[in-house]
Length: 213
Image (cartoon, rainbow, N blue to C red; front, top):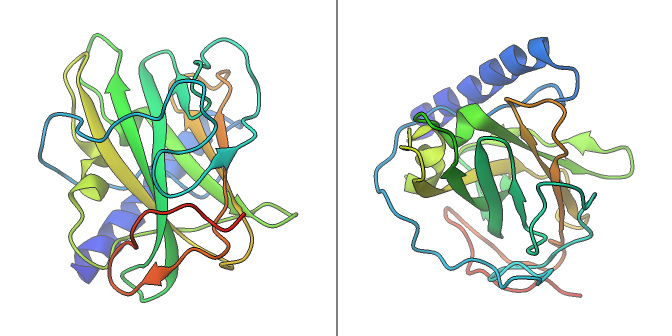
């Protein structure tokens, strides 16, 4: 699992370099992980419309922008070819035994052709006043949602997928940005993930819960 996770994270970097060569608006150094997954339907409930809180583990506050593409749910963004919703986030140890934040997304393919999360949008995460970009990571154990990032979906189909980011510290919030790889002019979905006080479980994601306010 560790060997395959490292390979997926390496593919993350390769896809980012390709994306960055075509647009300057995408932060350098990251892209969607490579992998394959199974499953076809979304089972996790969406966040309540108009709520600024993520449904399970914590609240993502202060979205940037409110123009075209933003829905009543601040955790959701409709892009040209897809709709992305931030569902929840937890802390866990990754395949290197380091602390990571695991973020779950619902991805819906709105395009007329098959598409995947990893080839349509890119999630990036930052910490600190200097906005240091967090490195992508891989799970310590098999995670079907992590692998689902590159699962090709038919038009109108949805899937839940997850991305892992290595933390610089467990005390500072994480600034999450999801950008459209196909439309560099589209405004990113930006969410703040409060992680201070959240438990970290060795080897797998902790139980989703609200962070200390």
